[in-house]
Image (cartoon, rainbow, N blue to C red; front, side, top):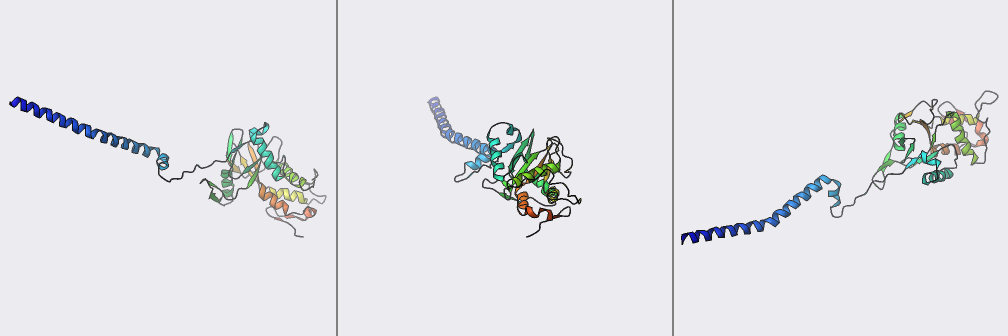
Length: 261
């Protein structure tokens, strides 16, 4: 009798253990899955935020890179540059027209206009002001247009500026002669010459190889430097000048005085 009772007790104990294990197993599995999910979310960073109800995730937009090397062939970049230059009324005096929040590439060098402006401002003891755009990216305050000319063999800074000036006045119906920038017979600088001299204080010379703004405007190595114009600033100045009285301009080496009529 006793062995039978003992066997019954063992069988009952085994059944109780099986029931206990089967009852706990689904719960443990769920907890394990929850823990794995929690770990995965912790490691994924942004994905954890995406799973929050009502969360709005914005992707920071990046403006296109303007590739100088693409100008030689038909395509989007060439069409875009022709359109922008037409809007400004310039022709061959600049190669690219770039917005202050864009970048451009020359050869294998990609240049951020924002970084160039930061360097140029810092060189004058100023800070480039920025603001958040709709995507959340920081961009310079006010999207200005910048003309970029890639220095070629045989170029000098004076002739580069003179081409820009010719482009501007052609759209005004005024053609500048090849000697318009030369001094008068008295030895005094012509009005055009004074504008060109003043324009040297307004441009940025950027060294592509060294990736920095340079203060030396006289040494411009072909294909390794670019001349950058603030087109809005340059044209705003030229619009104030009555070409009929251009020779009455005064320039002291750093400032220019425009006669008022």
